[in-house]
Image 1 (cartoon, one colour):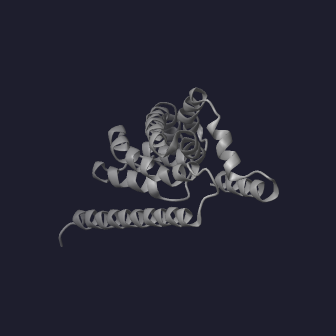
Image 2 (spheres, rainbow, N blue to C red):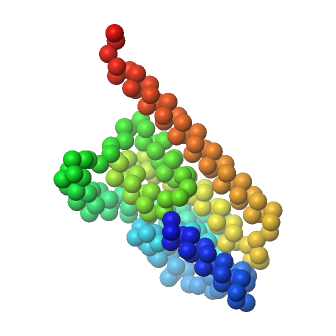
Image 3 (cartoon, rainbow, N blue to C red):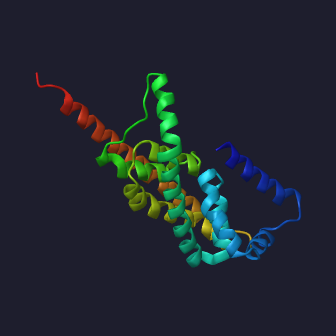
Length: 211
């Protein structure tokens, strides 16, 4: 989160204190080779690279339609790669670390896994790679991650893809629309969390013996 804030502040300072314009940034991205970009866009976010930059480049280099197709493909690689890393290299050492401290990794019940994927994809604040790793380490199955998480990640990417597709400085109307989308995302996330809490309380009541 701190890195994302620093990146935003740095970009803002560049625009304020230099002669660099939004159009020049977009034009520079449009000159990049797709054959060099695509492998980097697919692999770097698995290691923690900012996915917002990936979305921005997708919109600027490939446009809103093909940019969405590119994001769909690279997000599939992100999720499968994250699942493979978390289930092979990370889970064992983390499980042993937790056991030494009298703890264990969380295990999401199968019926709650889709809702957890929705929350992980929509909740603000956590870096993209962190939220993906946390979901996998919590026991969410790959098929659920792809069926639920993949379309949500692609849908939310359009907030930034559309900015990247703007050849000139983003208009106020477009920025307002994008902010409205973010607000809707937060509302959906809050609703899903509320439903999970209701379900959890129902489980607790059911587990209390009668009398």
